[in-house]
Image (cartoon, rainbow, N blue to C red; front, side):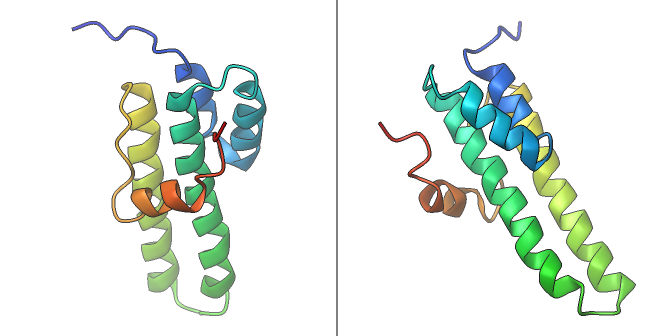
Length: 110
């Protein structure tokens, strides 16, 4: 089975490369308005927002176990989203993906 290049795949992949990649992907997709790319931009925005929000609270705990669990959780979700973008899928990340789609629904509306 060949993996043809879905329109917006490059933009969707870039969205997962740091928060700056998400911002760049948003502006790359501004003219094309590809819904596949917007799906992954919303997922990446949600992942990075969750990362920064929870990191604020994790910093108050002096526990390697709590910090490590959070980072492993984030890396697994990030990897799942990134691989979904590479494989031309629009599966939301587990647990939070559908919430991200609802929360950031204004991204990509016409």
